[in-house]
Image (tube, rainbow, N blue to C red):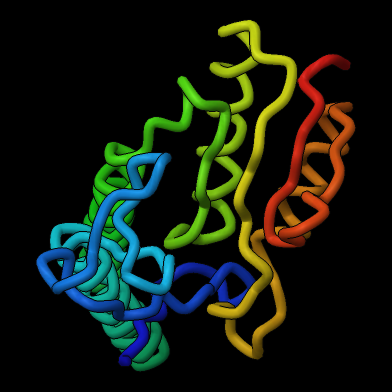
Length: 195
């Protein structure tokens, strides 16, 4: 299984496992609308991977343009440096757009608002924080008293050190919600929505 690492700050990078295709035998929807394989592992759509691949390509182009811009500037060609820098910014915007579309693709299959559960697998740290903030607002306004946030335990993170879970915990604490790890699944946080 290959992995995809994207273009955000290295602290935010979480490997996205290349799982079996959604059409593979044994792939089905779980109770939350997520595609899972016969072992219960999350399976992402080909469209999701297409957007992540586009984002990675744009990240590489952005880096190349910025490197070439620095070189042109150091050689005294300020006009060319500005042109290359502008191209790098365009590639960065396209990268952000592709990542946003990947998040939309990932979230559209989840019925998380109605069930009070959200699965953050497949997201980068910043994306997970943004999605979680929106999720908590919606489930709280829907009158739910608690919500479950599946952060995972970090198995797909670089070095197998969780990045999403600690970031989400800090965010929840800053928002003055209480929470606990689910007893039988330390990759899930149960959040009390009553402040």
